[in-house]
Length: 256
Image: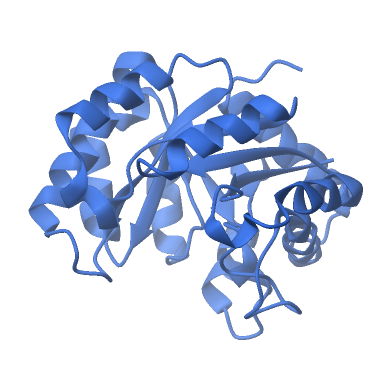
């Protein structure tokens, strides 16, 4: 029984066969999913998909790459949607220094606004981090994000930052890269993180795990992620699945 804590079933890549993809995930043992909306187009669809399936949930937030496009009205809209019964987190939010569409100062401002919103509505946050670890940690600490905690989504940094994240009340979520042959950092992190603070995800349609690397990712493949982490930790897939699912249900405040 697995929980894919971060999937974009609302992406264009699933437009033609979304229901088949969802069925494959359920058939593979993925019981729960959180569909992440991150802009004006993907947020309504995330909620719509969640409404159609008992064990699929939604997160609503604004992606840092598109921070320059976010208005005060958008922030108010996200606040309104946060009260929807299937919305379980605010995000994804954060900083992305790889792409240069949105200036860093605007990304930081939008990030801070969303943390404050999450604290106002008392919901966990989902962090997108690309090449911006130090700044993300600084902002999370300054904004006292520990109050709500959340997820370091698709954690791709050194194990040296893990304890800092744990101290801020964050879970560490690992995806496809942990299965890549030469990806030493996520493998190190997979062993380092306490089991009670570990989550699994796909980030589908992106970052497909081995042996599907380079193809469209889908939530059924979260089992490959879980299998690799269980192997690295030298525990059973059942134990890993049970604990990471329990962690996600607790974090998202889902009562089953």
